[in-house]
Image (cartoon, rainbow, N blue to C red; front, side, top):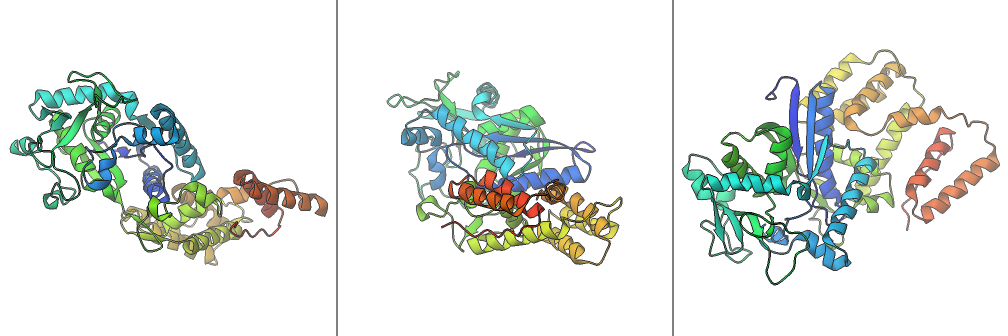
Length: 447
């Protein structure tokens, strides 16, 4: 149950905008969208907040210590010969564009770390005033042991008690405890940073974790209902976020419910740029409708790893296409099918069990029940699934049935040209019109 009857406060850790998100990242963002849609479907008023990390996320996070390494935005700026601000703006805009492509509702608040530096500094001031922050050579650090001595528990979401500093990174001898983490990092006096701010402790930039605490509490209050993110954030980011927030607010628990999406495998193994399989939405668009990826995500439970292959995506694309074609000519009825709607509702209420929800959809579609009732329920289900199943119905309403063969052939040729030019959005629009005219369109992956 939510803290306030009928209302939910929800936060998702969004992307670090230094590069294109991978399809592994997009699984987490689709999870957030599914949860938001589900809450709306069930009648809750949801205040949905997502952050864009555009400063402070260091490369040491890959090695087990998020307080070391280069700032990802600064590193990308050097590589692309742009400013860090340009990098953040470009990839931030790309992310917003990606939300539209994969049919994710834009959160109520989409906030940037760099727009909330003052809020982060103010929260650090409060933590310092309570004796839970200390200064060392490279920044301000949170005192985990001191936090625990005051009766608090640290790291309940993870196995932090099993983590040993120095396994993959050099030990920082100035830290009081290996688990302590940066609240504020001082700028290197040798290397000029592009993103830095004045603070009571010196010029620098915020640690990675503090932004989520400052922004979530600003928009959702000191305590709220639901926090989402990828399972990689369970080890340090979310425990650190919890500790510093509860230290600053003196309120516990910071969050009532946590949801962590499992990793996405690729061809049975891990995804990585060095392996050439860190696919993005642009890679998907070259071969399939992006919504096929959304359908693919729905086939696995969010807590379990699923294995991405191009064959699996092709199967998802085929299933989505069949679903649209089977229902395209059905007229929407006044009433749906209450029994199927109850089963669908039970599936999504069961820890967002989307595989079971899809099974209900297909069982209903193949049943001998009235088509108009099936269509009514199907469109209702799509309020959660987000597969744009209403588009097939809209396409059938085109008053273009008087096109002759030459006109259709011209449309076909134009579509081939657009695909060759990788103008897939425009090509898909022509494809949809052709399908609406009854022309069979079968896409094969471009070579």
